[in-house]
Length: 213
Image (cartoon, rainbow, N blue to C red; front, side, top):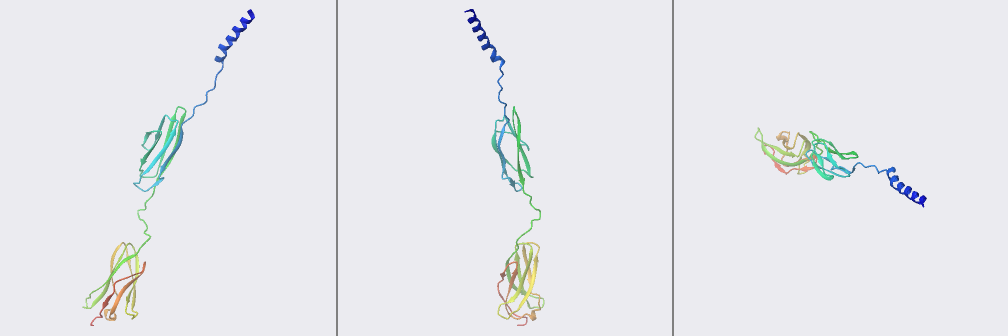
């Protein structure tokens, strides 16, 4: 009986002492997780706008540099950088800090853009007095930008008269052209100006009376 009592006391003592001798290893904590961080669109024109968007879990604090500061764990922020800018998002908890970057690129605009098209948009043919008292045959040619237009002065009565010329525009506008032949050599009849390049365009028709007729 005495042995049974002693054994019971020994077992009770083990129950009390053993738990205090065992250390249970707790799982290590995890740093925050950045699910997404992006710029939409990723490239903008000067003065354009982009939206930064993000989603973070497990963070005590979340911030974005470039003057934005503390933000919520998820959200969006509109930005309009003057030049291409890399934004860095930082997420922190007691187990560390993680970061992710997003680029908002700003497209470069040339100060001297190259024009890829040039066309003649109008031709008006007319006559005007010359210093000799005869009439000059002239025309106004209008273009939508810089370039060189080639044209023909043409008779329209089947006589086959034709005289080639060209005029250069430094910018969009209207220029006057006059047929560069002696009026006495130009036969009477209907005439037009026919632009050949950069596009095909024909003026109105005017009947010209030779000087002295």
